[in-house]
Image (cartoon, rainbow, N blue to C red; front, side, top):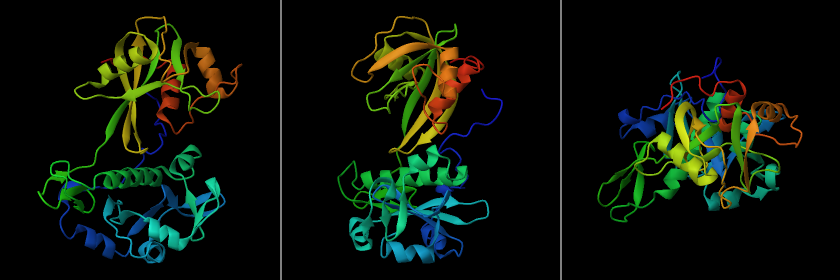
Length: 324
């Protein structure tokens, strides 16, 4: 739907994953590679070397071993186009305590190294798109491995398998694969130059965004868009057009962006999920994008898919492709 490629946060990962071809020796070979690189997470944040606006979150294994000590490395993200392995590991509580946490908030440090928040890095585009996407993959996998430590069939412990591509039950050999939770996020419009935006209570002050919700079992993307719009705003939606998608590793979702044509106008919004919901003209939405809205209303930053859905509407591209 766009004339130029859009820069979506977390979507630039170019690693070759080769999940289906991994064997027993894959992880060992990756760790032995002289150009292997490791991303290190601690307490939900990423260790890095930072100087001013320059951020380097990738450690060679020699440097990394002085930080993570005996922490086991289980996750191979994939290989670069040059064949260099990229891995990820999470430091345990004991190792974090040994290194020593310092500071608070955005100024936290571990063992003298800055601890950086992935969402904040994406908001200011502090990383190249490929590295940002690799960190998103690492965050998603680390979150999933942490929550899949026991077998859903027999309750026995599971272990990482195929260099982190899956987990295997130690008792019944049941294989468990990483879970991705699909989320529909939609720019609802009335076909006459107005779009629907909502505000959740936890949003930053004066920020509005698109409606969104998890896709439920046995549900199509377009029906999820229609259901969520009706549940949250009381509007009936007809045609739904796909726009783009975005990995969202908080903790492990895929945002599926759509344009949705509302067949009704009167809003009855859900006061539990939304604190406000209303129609805005195309000109008002443009003013929000430009930071000149008369009420001071702002929109999600350009790293978020919601920003690009709203921008497409502002450019008159809400019906540029076939609807579903």
